[in-house]
Length: 133
Image 1: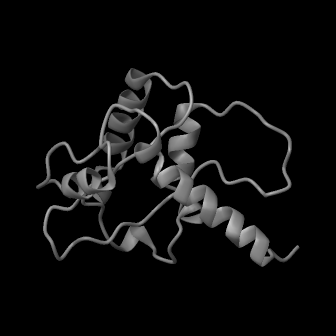
Image 2: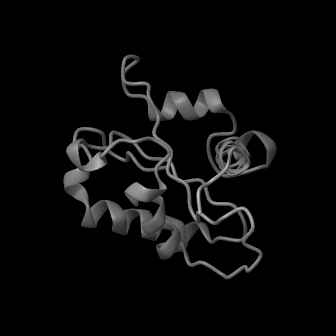
Image 3: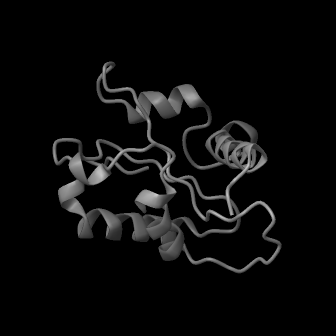
């Protein structure tokens, strides 16, 4: 089935809703987009963000299931869930911010992010310490 413009609009609105969550709800980090950019951009010329979104579901899907933090994190870094046609395997991540919505334990997220960074250390630059948020 070919996606429609409505499907694309739904995806864009879901992604933008996720990215701007820190503006609309209280959270632990980065209470506005300026702070997010300041914390994520090491050099002014390296200011391009690439968004990964999980879970990706079709607009008409009405079946809901609980998704674990490890599963969400794996999907978030999956090339099929990236919102840009870029093969991240040919480059490296400078910084990373994971925004989770819902009832998620901060410790579980931190442990999972540390796990991802340790398992995939070749995809992250080593000269930026603590590059996960």
